[in-house]
Image (tube, rainbow, N blue to C red):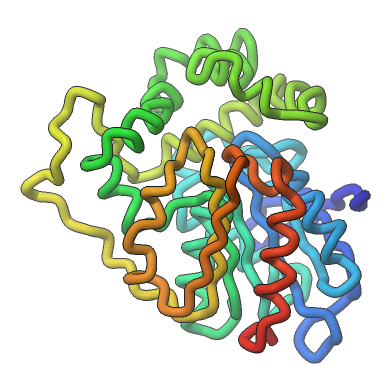
Length: 306
């Protein structure tokens, strides 16, 4: 069990419902801080098994991110650009008196965690990174152009961004959009959280907020019939190397993000540990909690992880 979230107001005016559990610490304390970021379309409970497992040794902080559940849900697309979502994480750390921390993220939370790690390594605030089934920002855009499996798996981006589907959301909430994009597969995969998630998805403001993560992203997703080559004017993102220790956990049966996302990752991450989890789908943190917890134990106990 993990405690219920409490409200935290950030300096930017955003308010995030946040679980904050484990030995109280900041710099100089006896318990390093871990900040957990969930993905779409879940909540802080993405990490429930890991928080329960680690909170005797670490201060575990897990927000419902902007646009989700009871947290602030601005309705304009511009409020969900990656810089603002990354900024929320540092503002949350500030609000809770946390100086240095390890960032952990899954899915969209992992995409933001890459950005938090890359930004936080420069000023020393982010000491380690854990990414679970979230593609690297320099690799994923190329795969969308060149990899048939990844492009096909990412066509739901186009549906989520299409304003023609807004009426479906207004009528049925987010579940209507998910069923249109994926069929019944997400519902069958949600396990014991299904009832709570369906209740969350009925909130129309939250549904629009969650979809705005996709609409504000600069990621281009070509249609299936476009050529499988990089455009002549393609310019890769100027992503610096990540030099802090990083653990990447990858569920090998992920329908949305195939293992090709691991190819070449070592070119961008200089202190990299990869743990492949066989037999798990996308939601690896709760589909295979024992494997994830074991990987975290090993990584967080390693000499680099002060």
